[in-house]
Length: 153
Image (cartoon, rainbow, N blue to C red):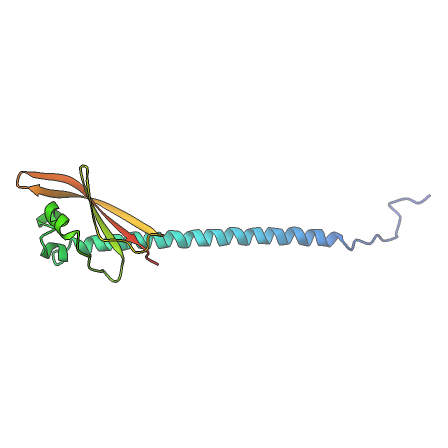
């Protein structure tokens, strides 16, 4: 009778290494997928942050004393927006700021006045700031000025 422990005949294990290779390959593939997904998500977040910074830059450019809105009387002193002038100029086109396609929206109580049009609306960012809105000599109401940036690649 032969004992299993003392049997010196070899057993061929040709296919046992294939299973290990498959497991390692699947593991490496999953790691690459995770790293790639994190990289793409990080790039998307960086692009959105850049667009919000661009919207804030346009806000600062619009509210600077040498902007077209100050010159036309749309923005009065201390960042107050003249509603009647905003409505008057809302039918004209907005000047470009470094080729950026943007739109201004002024919201006061139940009114919403839109100035400018977006050409490419598949990817847009909106940033709002509270501003005082001059109605007439007796009325200054709180309002919200929103800038919408669209199609920035």
